Length: 324
Ligand SMILES: Cc1cc2nc3c(=O)[nH]c(=O)nc-3n(C[C@H](O)[C@H](O)[C@H](O)COP(=O)(O)OP(=O)(O)OC[C@H]3O[C@@H](n4cnc5c(N)ncnc54)[C@H](O)[C@@H]3O)c2cc1C
Image (cartoon, rainbow, N blue to C red; front, side):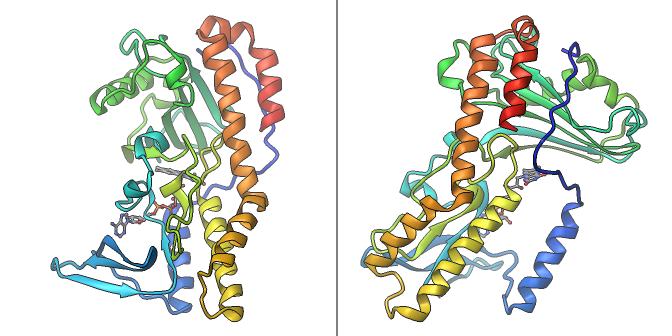
């Protein structure tokens, strides 16, 4: 509900920016570095030889199939990735349904009143209109006076341990969103008189981390980013971490290119996997998954109801503060 207020000081700062600024800049850097963009083209399959990935097949805008060969393929097609299934990546185990909302005309958003991110924890069985809804978090990021990003994220870490909860279909997810923005105490205040600039049901890939990043016995392909859930599970941030992961692997491969004729030698694969597991960013992501499982277990399984959550709020906040 809207009964308790506490401020959690996060140790890392948040940066707000418009998506296209990041994308435009990344594109400029990639073009400068000699990358060629193939728009309206779709990767359809891998090219493999002797248990190694040596390239990809893609379909162009005229449905013509092409092949590109290369020493290393970075599999970073996000949650729409068509390739991971055969290596054991199950999207339903990695993705969490999420509503995303943005408004630049939200008269009730006032930074002097709400300068911070607002979170509303919704434990199971709390909403009459969706009694089987899994635990969820609704949030508002006030960006400027009259401007906000908001959303609703299902938290599925405890799905198997909770009784009578199930992932809602798209229709119910929209219904829940409308209900929350119209009536939920505190949360709905931000939406009074607000005009919707963007509203979409999508997914965030932060439910489970897929570990087998080099899926072929003799290498060649590396899975990165949202494809394998490489995002900070407790902050739902994937942008920095996916880029850092790409940076890590590209540097490692380039380093090896100078020293070995067979880039994907057995010893390289072994060393690379070892270095990846010791890499502080990988450890940070692993820890974020561990932390969120614990936090969700305490909040949604141990506390369970809104009454209990409110009763235990102060120690809970201390725990979240420690983990933030
Ligand atoms: C609405 C929303 C808001 C978010 N906000 C934040 C935030 O504030 N901060 C943060 O850190 N993270 C945020 N995230 C998470 C972050 O966006 C992702 O973690 C990150 O974009 C993952 O990067 P990626 O490169 O792995 O995948 P993506 O960004 O999904 O990129 C994958 C690309 O591959 C393309 N593709 C898919 N299939 C094919 C195919 N067959 N052939 C060719 N191309 C294909 C897709 O079109 C896409 O361009 C948000 C996510 C969503 C959905």
